[in-house]
Picture 1 (cartoon, helix red, strand yellow):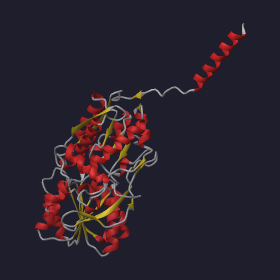
Picture 2 (cartoon, rainbow, N blue to C red):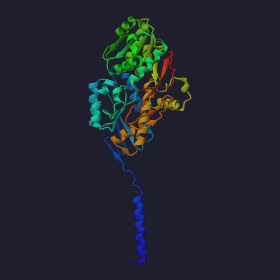
Picture 3 (cartoon, helix red, strand yellow):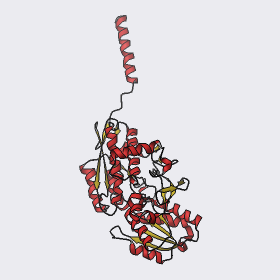
Picture 4 (tube, helix red, strand yellow):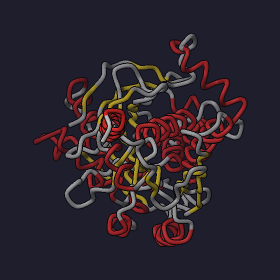
Length: 404
């Protein structure tokens, strides 16, 4: 072999080693519903039925994805968000979730709404190993990575929120006589569980009456009349917006004026306060974790300014005073960031891996509140602040409160 040939072979060997040392580009990996051009996501929400006010959340998230698609999508892929009506009915939810997973073949689910509705499908979804993300309920059962490792809530836990109200009452009026109206399902029971936990051994003496309603009931008038008759001077409402509005209005109409508390999920100005009447709702206390567009302190906030521009262009169907306008925007923002974190590995396994390691700020969360998850604690939002309705808008009056 000549020196020239040896030199050529040596050069080829060096080149081969150099090529071997250079990592190959990561290959794209896709699960159902993902491709080079599309990411298919599904949800269910009550566009009809007793909780139809919640549909503004899905409408807003859909509008957020429309903006992202107009900007070119996520890593060049458009989001196809399939949002189906389940009328807040568990049997209908089962039907629609099966359709999304088995027929539409979505990559994952985002923010299906309701406690009883999600309860009806959580085992099936986890058996199918489909990410069940940012679901619209704060029931504690949905933070159970051991049994439901594919499920993650969005709303701060109802029990923790109930405990916050109880501790506030103990600190401000320890001799209060409390009447409670709650939804007769896991939503209401979770709130009451935390509320009683917060009152501790004083719960039995302070709670003078507790009434429930079913979502099929036409009104809660009789329950409110009974609560007034109990002599309660604190009225705690753990309900969805429709029945919160009825309860607030009825109390006002029968000249009952206790200090009222309304759970965050039933506190929407558009869905509950305006239907009840601003005067009837004045002084109500609730809890919040996202910015209120009506609060003047956010007037010059860049994120809020961007939200108003987006509302005008992409989301005119939803009232700017509706709690679920910022709610759906925040969820859309979080999903897009999650997808960016996934890169070209759009498998269900990687979606869930990234979702269980979140640490991010969102544009419309209150300062000091951020999304944080871990494989052992899948609650993304763990903090809230108390707010009071002043007859026009909610006003913050507490520091950030951590929920355990």
